[in-house]
Length: 378
Image 1 (cartoon, rainbow, N blue to C red):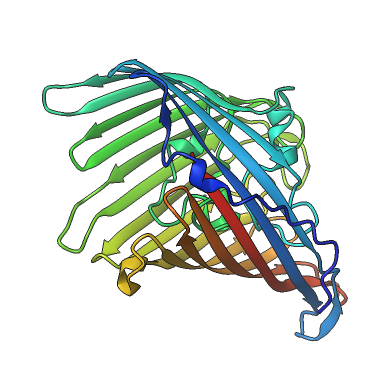
Image 2 (spheres, rainbow, N blue to C red):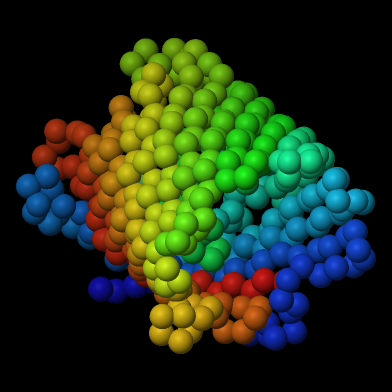
């Protein structure tokens, strides 16, 4: 295997000078963020439907470096103003990989420019939140501004962060939910004991066809603390306005609608497990109609490396009404903490796409991606 065009970006290991957490400028104002430098190399080939190898795609290595900056202002316990900015260099493999799913789900150079067709660069979120606390210890939070739906719904303890956990998008959020990000909206968060309820609505600048649309999502969560360990069980429902084309006539006027479950559960101090199942209707053009993913997390305390961890995940996606029949992804990573500010992750992925077409010469890509990611939090 010959690997070419190596564009991996590196970051000087001067992380010992970075603070371990958000820096408090005052009792009300804090600033923090994360810097990541990642590189991935793909070894991809194609096979015919009968399993015969056809040819190799071009194998290459590329990298990217996102930087996210967060500013939080708490005038008092009930109110918060929050801003997140993001900058990045390069786009990694995401624009040259033959697979439908992005091998690194972070916001890279093109992702932080002209966000949602709004002619806005670098500003991801900017919102105000007010929280009411009741005598029975229940809370009700309301947020308004430029928000990200992934901050409110489809969370998971072991598979939800592309900068510290899995890199492939399928293990970060369920793409069948079509979650809206970085646009105008409002969110409601209610919590009482082991139960939570979240609802949000957003207006998204444009979809892939350049049309403005509305997005909404609701989620009910149950968060028990058992003798086994902490667990999180969520039911999620999402949808959009009628701004998407019919898959046959291509006439606009259809909605996206999705639902699913997300589980994560600790089994003692070392082992944790996660599971996601999500489905969406096919009234409009969709790449996948269902997603099933799951995996394990192993805490480093099991081998006297308390801050390290191993993640292993597998995902199967059933194709929708476009060109994909099915996709499969396997990913495993080892994250080792260098100091209280920085960590490095070695990551490996196996991906396979199968097409619907009956063309016997159709090339279905499969292969491996090898990655390395350095993160520094401040």
